[in-house]
Amino acid sequence: MYSNPFEMLIQVLGNLYLFIVLLRMVLQLTRADFYNPISQAVVKATNPFVIPLRKVIPAIGRLDTSSLVLALVVQFLTLLLINIVLGISEPPMKYIVTSGVGVLYHLLDLYFWAMLISVIISWVAPGASHPGALLIGQITAPLYQACQRVIPPLGGLDLSPIFIFLAISFLKQALAFYGLG
Image (tube, rainbow, N blue to C red; front, side, top):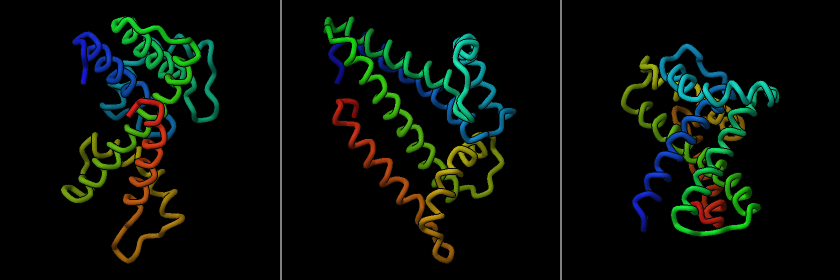
């Protein structure tokens, strides 16, 4: 657990903003509905930092590289602030590597939760028109489609979520080696 309340506060706030920044990147990558109220909230929360970065860092295809750079900076600053609070000194290269791995870990976490919510929505309210349900569907659709190309649905049973959860869990476990799990 946390030995210092400031460590917990920095971790929670840093991870929350990192989640919002990664969500923005995923929304653009999947071409989710920009006019969805949740998308608009994410854009408004990240615009103060993303817009200036876009003037310097161009997008690569559908990948919003300015959001990716912002995510790396947020993760880096979170790690740096926690280590300052705890009085730990690390080499700069360790912060850079750990930041990259941390962003990837949190991106997998975002997809894990999106998949879980998607599965629950498919059981409880299939075809729901709530903005959150629509956004989750748009985010997870590319994963489902990629997996269904390899493992097509069997009758009415779609096994793709199981394999996606396994892949995400495997990758997260591999990244946990770096102390992020």
